[in-house]
Amino acid sequence: MIGSLSGKLIEIDANMLLIDVSGVGYEVEVSSNVISMSPIVGEMISVHTHFVVREDAQLLYGFSAKHERDLFRAFIKISGVGPKLGLALISSLDPQSLVIAVRNNDVSLLTKVPGVGKKTAERLMVELKNRIDKLSEIGALPMNVADVAGRASTLMPTLAAEAEDALVALGYKPAEASRAVHQAQLALDDDALSAQALVRLALRGFAKSAHST
Image (tube, rainbow, N blue to C red; front, side):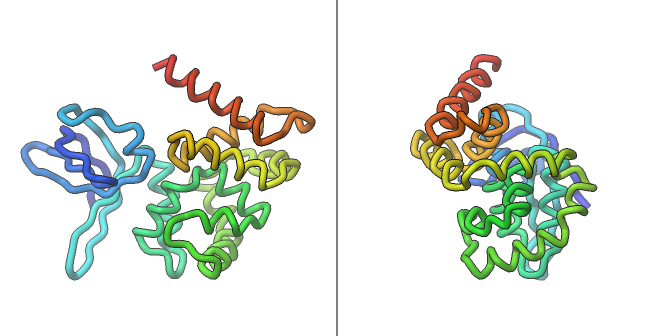
């Protein structure tokens, strides 16, 4: 089992990285979080990995953190969810977005994941509801699940969706937009909730993050 890789980043091709480890080049299919945080070509990079052996191929999937890989492994244990779909779920939904969607039975959020239609989303929702406690145990979801879910229920789902769409239109990745909107949601008072307010606060968060780096 190959659990992690550390080496020089040689190439970035869409969501595939080529990493040179002691003269051996490893192709690693990675989540959007890895892509967003990856260094420039020629610099060192470290990723947590999941190794898949098939009859026709040996595949490596890479993640920015151990909890992200743990969540991926939990996903692919669900009937009908393979590594490709598992990676798409990881790349499209951060843990906080996932728990809010499951607690609110928000199937529409799952349909935003590439490759997930309505029927697949409905089946996934049933499976995830059965596994939500297990996901919390492995550290993939926030410890204060009930608090997050309760706070989220005061926000109309359409407001969050509108804010996320606006951020994506500005050039941010769906996963980044989702995280930023939910952070903004938790910071706002109920009376101040609106799509515009969420976008403004999310943009401030992006600007603060960029300034700190």
